[in-house]
Image (cartoon, rainbow, N blue to C red):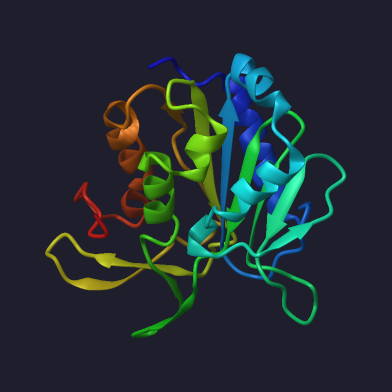
Length: 226
């Protein structure tokens, strides 16, 4: 598979920093955030340029960033935006935005809660499984947007994770929380090129997910959520 252009990687990382600072099309609640950008190749963007606003909003509404259901179409200066339900302050836990450049941005907040002696823990599978399912399924909303034969680059980050812990299996098979190293607030995953049959890139995506497990010191390569 072709390498991801450096400019795409750099732009995705800058965008994660902007999300971290609150520069978002839909106001988000406080807490860890999974940021995912899917950038189709140039030709594909123009092929899909005829898509109607109504069908785009319907497609975005079927996505589940970090397993959060999207319910509300919202105003957007550029492109289409769908978000989850909002709290009393008008903030949501997830949104999906498709820009005029046909870059899809999904942001979702994994559920965080206490586990043993850790107060702010989150679980694998919250963003991994929905993304794997929606990239693989024949009736996937992502397949509706990007044809299976097209090339796209997928870039992910976790941000606002300083002070939190990942609940996962240790190398000896015991499930417990692993604290994110002190001072680490944002984690960037390796970019993944999506091209051709799922079997060609699925393992690369799963390997990218393991960045967090390696960060907390685990050696085993296969997360238990699979």
